[in-house]
Amino acid sequence: MTAPEPLEDRAAILRDGVAVGLATGAYGVSFGAVAGAAGLTIHQACTLSLIVFTGASQFALVGVLASGGASLAGAAVGGAFLALLWPRLRSGSARLVAVAALALALGLVPTAPAGVAVLAAAGVALVVGAWGQPDPPTQGPLRASPTDRS
Amino acid sequence: MTWFAIAVAGVGCYLLKLAGLSIPRRLLDRPAVARVADLVPVALLSALIGVQVVTSRTAPGPRRPTREGRGGRRSSVLRAPFLVVVVLAAVSAALLRLV
Image 1 (cartoon, one colour):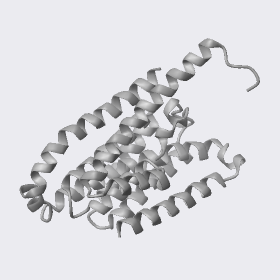
Image 2 (cartoon, rainbow over the protein chains, first blue to last red; image 1 turned 90 degrees about the horizontal axis):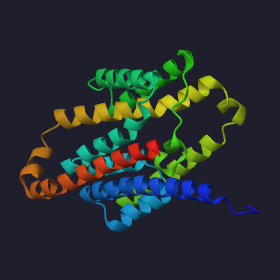
Image 3 (spheres, helix red, strand yellow; image 1 turned 120 degrees about the vertical axis):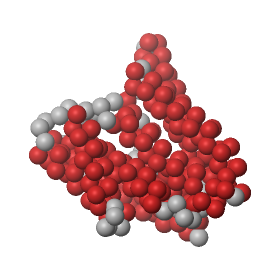
Image 4 (cartoon, rainbow over the protein chains, first blue to last red; image 1 turned 135 degrees about the vertical axis):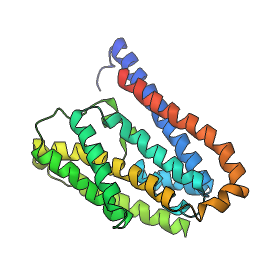
């Protein structure tokens, strides 16, 4: 921090910053739309973002609060989860885990509570991660960005 | 009720983040742990999407009146902008990866 960065570095940093801001901002707008559709007030939506400060669990909480109420919010929460999942499916093992976890959760959901089905699906990640072949982790700009707050 | 849920979620998520930060570095450096940490969100999100789709299909009862009633107009007005926003989020995330 003693000397200012070279000009080309600053341009790259600025570009990255604007890109992160746009992506995070778009996700924030979609959270606001879902929260509003679920019946939360503006203050409740903003407080949720301020003190919970996570991506997916905010959407999950709004989905729970809206259950029985707005059907739009339920569908939109699924869309938000999909938007979070999509950029993570770049490696083969990630796709395998996604498909296997989906199948396990769908198999369990008629007989087990929804929460149990979802948690059991996390076991697929444990098995594939622990015994699967070495796979380069899906590291990208989003991994380290505030967008990745799932 | 909503405010109570927000407070509980805030405290709970803070404690979870604290627990994650307390995991020793040498444990996280192990390749298997890194792979599992990378794949757990994939499994959870995928399972959540599946459960969401199935539960909204098998329980159309309480949803139908709201769709035909006052909520119907509201949702049809709100649905299009939200899809635009989700697509926008996905596109900007994709662009971000190209940069």
